[in-house]
Structure formats: C-alpha cells, structure tokens
Length: 274
Ligand code: A2P
Image (cartoon, rainbow, N blue to C red; front, side, top):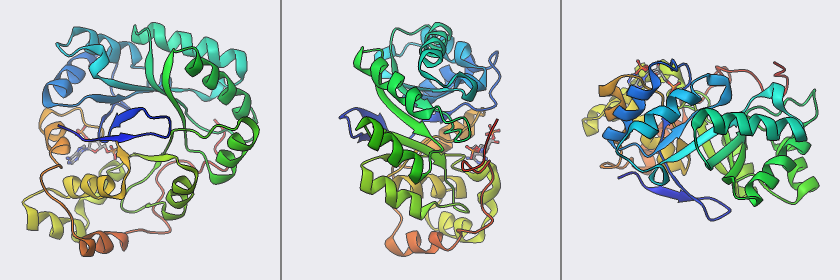
C-alpha cells in the first residue's frame, strides 16, 4: 500500500493520490470506484473542478469506508473572505455529502484581492471546530506563507504547487522545509509533457518502468505528496505502482538537469488574478 507522510499537525496523508482536475462530474463516480479498487486512498478535488458531487458519490458507492479515504478539496478564488469561506465550505461539504473533510486548501493566494489572511482565519476555525482535519494552501509564494504565519501564528500543513521535472521549484521547496510545510505537486506529470524526455525514458528502461513512474518516484523520494490525474484504468494502476523500486542518488541528480527556466505550464501565482 501507499506510504503516508505526517504533516506538521500530526495528520497522516497517503503520499500518492488521484487528481481529478478536468474529470467530468458524471464520469467521476465510476473513475473513483476504479481508483479505490486499484488501491488509491487519497483523492484530490476542488470546488472549481465541478466534480465534488461525483467524487462524493463514488466514495459513498464504494466498498471502502469513508474514514479510510483521505479527501482534499479547495476553496475557489471568488469565495475568499472570512464569512464567504464558511459558506463555500458548507457548499463543498453538501456536494461531497461528508460530515468532515481531510484537507481543505485555499486554491490561489489572489494577492491583488488581499483576502487570504482572513480566509486562512476561517480555515483555522473550521479545523478547530472539527470539520476539517488538516488545512493548507495552494500556489502560495514564500511572501504569502510568511504573512499567514506572521499574522496568525499558524503555518499551513501543505502548499500544493505546480511541480514536475521541467519545473522543479527547488527554492520554494527549501522554504517549505524551513517552515515545516509539506510540498504537494500539481500537474506532477507536467500534463504529459515530461514523458518523452530521454533522461526519464532511459532511467525508466533500466527498471522496466515508464517515464511517468520514474517521475512520480522522483517526487516521492523528494519527500513530496503527488497527485497524478488519470481517468484511464491502466494508467491509474501504472501511476500507483511506484513503491517497488528506488532511484539512485545519481539518477536523482540526472533528473535535476531537466529543470528549465521556461518549464512553468500554469499561471504565475504572483500575478494570477481570476
Ligand atoms: P489520462 O487521464 O488519459 O490518463 P498531470 O497529472 O500532470 O496533470 O497529467 C495528467 C495527464 O497525463 C492526463 O492527460 C492523463 O491522461 C495523462 N497521464 C496520466 N498518467 C499517465 C501515464 N502513466 N502515462 C501517460 N500519460 C498519463
């Protein structure tokens, strides 16, 4: 089974989960059931994905108990602010059909709106009230993290950021380590981009693995949580099959060289405003 990491609040998270961005709400229940069947016990959704209801239905229909599954959702940008956050959280819980959530993240910092500190205070209260087990953020830059800590005394358990072989985020990971924040990788496969890289395919051939598996294994060995998205049964099984081999220090160093100044795929959190 998938190993867990212990977050700064003592909560354990399976180090690999299923991402469900761009998954149709109508398709989600069957895909979730497939994933649980393949051994996944961690699902990463968001209000913005429009599939919380389908994810909740898939979990309810499955033979796996709710408490054995780690579920993440995220607060969308237009719901930031203290009161609005609490309303949005209730809506998310209604859609999922849950009475508690494992992890709730602020999806983007939205620095131009400047509401993320009061949003964070609402998350702290929801956690203290027992409605969320762990709270965190996504796409927060070091400045944003430091401000949360300064103004509330509480560091996020997790920062979920874009991270894949072409965009490795070494400096950001170092800041996380200093602050006791676990790094979680979104678009861990670079939306498929990394998979034809010759360094990865060569290492993969050595182990009888795929470039996708080497990429996910690299993230595991960096100490990150990773959430590859796949709607396909075989690829879903392939992506969780990364716990029977280990990359050498030399291979980890080779992968470091894939990092690129032009590697970013998604929006820059410093200016993202949507
Ligand atoms: P599919 O859902 O058809 O499997 P990321 O998680 O970086 O955003 O990448 C997700 C994309 O990569 C999806 O388009 C997904 O397509 C594809 N993908 C997921 N797993 C694999 C894999 N093992 N090999 C190749 N492509 C994959």
